[in-house]
Image 1 (cartoon, helix red, strand yellow):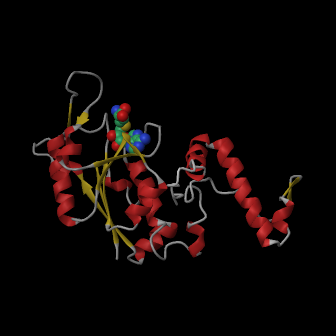
Image 2 (image 1 turned 60 degrees about the vertical axis):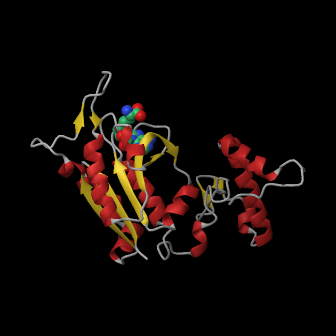
Image 3 (image 1 turned 120 degrees about the vertical axis):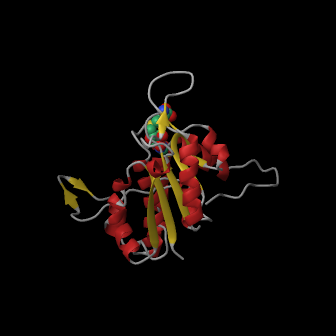
Length: 245
Ligand code: SAH
């Protein structure tokens, strides 16, 4: 089954961009995923091809019009009927690896890229659009966010990544950051590789990696650690919550 990405944007020339090279590019050549871009401006009803207007209530910038966006979304849905419509916006739900996994297991995604001040709010309920953020940062447009979202999905598609296990030990897959990696040379600028990794003792190596993963998550991402720890040490009230993966 081909994962079909439809990107709605004012800058279709930004695609496939980085998704045209390396693993994603090869996977696209092989038909593992497909990409369509839709120029939002083509759905403007006026002769100046206007897509935006001034914000109601005043203030700086311009807002993408709901009627133009709706026409573009309806067109995309007709071509990619089963895919969820996702708008990239800092006001959205933070993207997680769990959501990426769900999307990668589905038929694809219709991804709406904002510009200027963003979207007329009515589009989200009016067209059943999911709002997703790629982090607590503000980009100048939704395109780099869409590239992130799609890249994260594409690498999970069957056959895209080399070793089958390289997707499952990764950061966030078990609610923790991954353990640190090292490679040759064994000595670099006076810095060595942890001895245990050179011991050949697989049980010891696994234990060290697990412990590093926990130590690093606790110190770097207390938010992740708290959730993980909360899941592990549920009160013994009988119904112990299952550890999420
Ligand atoms: N005025 C908006 C920001 C608009 S930035 C606000 O303060 O919330 C212009 C566009 O860039 C947005 O419409 C969105 O599509 C995209 N964008 C910016 N930051 C983003 C983020 N963190 N995640 C996803 N999309 C983002």
